[in-house]
Length: 320
Image (cartoon, rainbow, N blue to C red; front, side, top):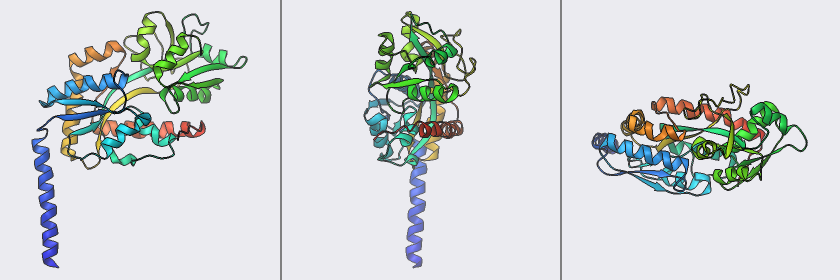
């Protein structure tokens, strides 16, 4: 019995020593960032920019791999089931927390993915056609309360535009008919083509159309104004404090990844986002580099879950 206990204790000690040694030498080979969306979107753009910055900080290549599907669940599942050795990370958007709110089944548990670092936020911008009579958020709400209401395009159930629509309904009693599209870009084109009256989409997606006078921006939905659109007031500034959401992206790791590795990755992401090179790449596209500590990101995730879950429930957001 004592011999068995000794062997078990020895094995545990050796295991801990191996993890410590692994963390000390990490990274000794290329790291993978799994983007749970296709190439070319806002999340992919941020992940690739941060990957380049992190590679310079760590002196090791960071390879971006796109694994789209099932509203980002496919890529998240791959990472959740990967070895917790510090060589596979997930770089998702808000769906990593909202999917569990709207889907009846998930292939992994929420705590199978551990928050590592916040990367950036693309504030959501509420837009209408350029020749729309609507010029601000109060005008949108007022217009929605006349006749049959307004059509509001989204990128599907549980997407950020969907949450914006539900926030406007809850906060201001806006009468909005949600029209789901396959992507945020399709929802934006529907506004430009006047098939719908309004939508809300990431700044990086709609900024070119706003600057090209193809869409009119009436509000941003983050806590501060967008540097590239300094004259555009936030929803809160217009009296709608409950309309608060952004297209954020972060870094997650499989549960069990050593804390030393998570800390090193967090510091690398934070340092990369502070460089003038990365800021000059992101800010002109309407993307706000964030960074911060692991504790900061964990608190942010908890606050987002607490804020968005009641909205998902009250709107009966469901997706099989």
